[in-house]
Length: 295
Image (cartoon, rainbow, N blue to C red; front, top):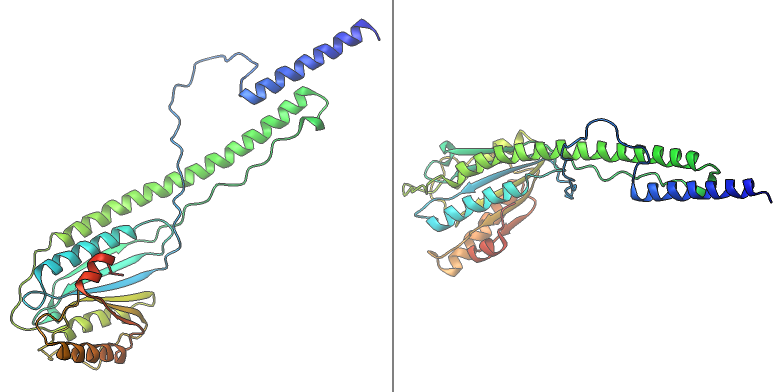
């Protein structure tokens, strides 16, 4: 075997070794010409994993003192605000929350409206191409070129994915800031005192009108002892058809005898189901606070 042949093999082996080292460490074999890019790279963004939430409409009726304790009034405001913020995330079809207050004429009450627009889900990381095998190439230059092409293609996929995540998270931050303004306004609402009467039917009529104009997932939340002594707004037009759940929270019968409380609760469960509600749940103040029951 000639010395020139052996020398050629050695040179080829050295070239392969240099190319492999360069590929492993990501080094360039060609000196960098021109200025250096000192621009800081964009931070890596991790996708938010959140189960799909369909479009929802929630109506919250909050009773007022003296029939409803002031501490419960503020607790419900706070928990509804926090729940709304928690649901302001990616991968959801939108959320509208109406909050109104029960008093002697609940049909003409102050109403807060909080709107969370739909936000798409974060795309998951794309599947990258595997690097080619050196066994399939005779020339180190051809192998290096093939590896470079795959790396560039993979980097393009990553850059596109990260760009979509960045845009979605910018949207989420903007929406959360807007929703925070609305939830802060709700929590700043002072306790309303109304000893002129208790009109639950007026609140149900308002909620009914909102529900009938929508076909999304609908939930009714009533924070009240369910004391009603005004019937002027009782109407056969009240309809809770299509309402998936009614949650009666911070419900207490402290001013009633146990037998009277049981009879009152039974009557209201039947009334709400007659209006069309599918599921009616009652939660005591302790349960409501511990489990933060809202919607």
